[in-house]
Amino acid sequence: FASGKSGAEAPSAEIKNAAITAKILLPDPERGYYRGTRFDWSGVTASLRTKNHEYFGVWFPRYDPKLHDAIMGPVEEFRSADGGPGFAEAPAGGEFIRIGVGVVRKPDTAPYQPFRTYEIIDPGKWQVKAERNKIRFVHELKGPGGYAYRYTKVMTLVKDEPRLVIEHTLENTGTRRIATQQYNHNFFVMDNQPTGPGTYVKFPFELKPVRPFTGDLAEVRGGEIHYLKELAPGQSAFAEFEGFGSTAADYHIVCENRNSGAGVRITGDRPISRIIYWSIRTVFSPEAYIAIEADPGKSAKWTYTYHFYDVPAAK
Image (cartoon, rainbow, N blue to C red; front, side, top):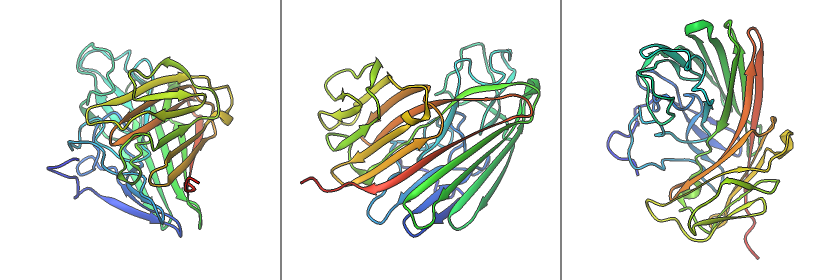
């Protein structure tokens, strides 16, 4: 796993309740653990432990704070086909915005590339308030071309329960409409178990492949993803699915490691717009996208809930 500069000096906060203890890494343009431009800087989670299980942690071989995916936890990305607010209209050398990151430079005329790290011109203004069982992030940004927002994320550990609630509000404080997709990448590292036959993922509808799994590593059975063998270093199982309906009822994802007994149910309060599934030996990630739109002066709100549990031992 990641060696060299570990990010150990990055600012962090601990939140806990009777069932969960979580270590949250804080946004900071100078010292933050993650300073890339792909993911929203709030909510990076180095560890989330229940009594019996660990759900997140380092899964990548190399750490660099500006690498697009040197990040952990239930982290989120705003992604749109046109590159995001202001990208399409910006000339080479111009500026556009990455929500939860800041104003960044468009270096050339190439299409937007999520895995590329762009130069940050203005990281905006972050406010963070940590309490015993919750943490609140507020990011305010005034960007080019009339784009501006106030983005709030609150992560709460529900009193005495093994439950994490992530509430979002994106307030459009500019003069241009904001339309984007957003998803949680869910970098699950359950008890440091390798991805394989013990890994189980289920959606409440039949998964219809847009881009199916290739090879013989994983397969779909109805709404379930099953692994046929343990992934070796360098192997990945990737797919894209549809089959979801037009209501939030389909945003109900079950993830388990049946070898260690760690489980989580994830629900959302908006309909799914796209599903990507990605995994390598050290991590597995169901990524359910939703559509977010906010006219000037209006706000968009959405919530994800994580219910952690112990998987009953196989009879």
